[in-house]
Amino acid sequence: MKIAVFGSAFNPPSLGHKSVIESLAHFDRILLLPSIAHAWGKEMLDYTLRTQLVDAFIDDLKMANVARCTIEEQLFNVSQQPVTTYAVLNALQEEDHAAELTFVIGPDNFFSFAQFYNAQEIVRRWSVMACPEKVAIRSTDIRNALAQGIEINHLTTSNVCAILTKNNYY
Image (tube, rainbow, N blue to C red; front, side, top):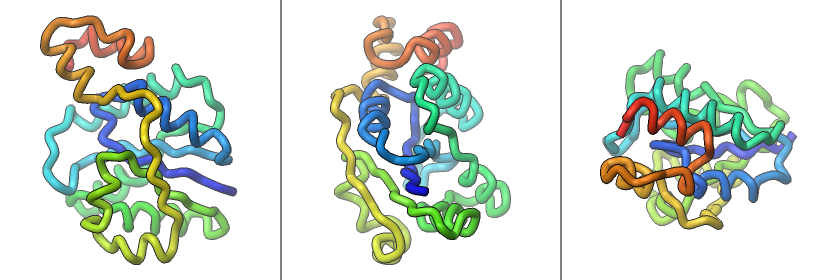
């Protein structure tokens, strides 16, 4: 089984994320991995709220091979420390020894990948795919629009838009 592991803050999910996911449709499974605690201290909406947004985003995608992965949450609950990509991939491989894992990174992480913990070991053991957005919409665009009271329905999916506007998360 070929599995794409797409890690992101998903702070919040955007149409840029959607364009990356759609380009991964050839994988048997696409796991969306919202970061629970950013390794470099990035400010993010509470993890539980972001997972709700990711779940709504997945519902909107209507792609049977896309699911939210909870392995980072499980690892964090044990260590209470930011979870590394290496730890995530290692744990996923332990769950399914035969799986062919590909770690998918966006353009924001591509140039800093060498700084990832155990980056050389990740490349040795698993595939890494840099996958730019085909739609140039970032989570920052959504947060900025919300802060300015601008409509966001052209920046994210319908359910995510509804949750964000109803709850004033940003």
